[in-house]
Length: 81
Image 1 (cartoon, rainbow, N blue to C red):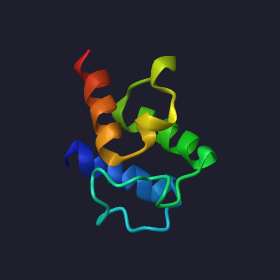
Image 2: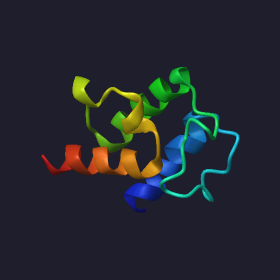
Image 3: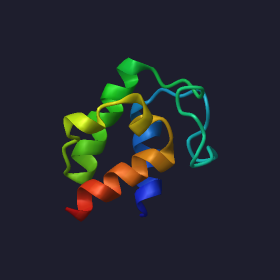
């Protein structure tokens, strides 16, 4: 599975979006698709478990979790270290 597919699965399981995560564009606004601040915390925790990373304080902002692409970029940065 690719990083993007893994992110889509985490979103499907934890984000409670109104949109189908398999058809969302990578740059689609996840908050417009139904992501809330509460569900974004659940998504963050699930991503940390899935990818064995920890989001540093500087990444704990709305923009990082705003799209599949921005989540992918954050995960890529964290797993490259």
